[in-house]
Length: 137
Image (cartoon, rainbow, N blue to C red; front, top):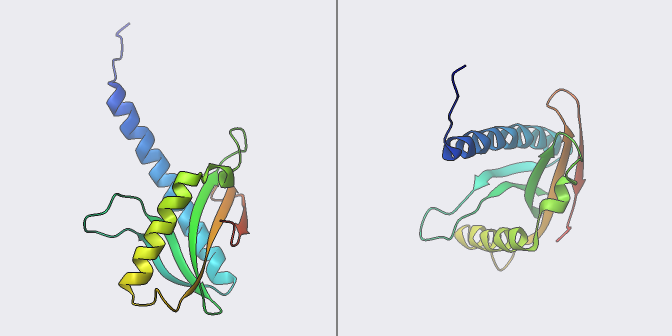
């Protein structure tokens, strides 16, 4: 029997692609949920392009004059914890920093009302639950 050798970097690349694909599905479901609940979508996957340390905001939406910066977390099961639990202090700091850049770039830093939310999606594309945690950090 022939032994199959796969480089660890290849496995990481496959894993990254699978996670990115799951993230895209989660964001599609989240956008659909938000629109159904009266939100206007302003941006998806916001990331400043110049001289920045990295990161992105999954969804920026508006409802009732409030700008919502939303992190989307999708899990097929809660075996490894809830999605909302994976929004660490470091991730929150990154999102806040990106939100500031967004508000400054739009000229609304001084006047905008905003909050930071998490959308948690549990299950699969065909069979899932969605929960919105508003103003949670």
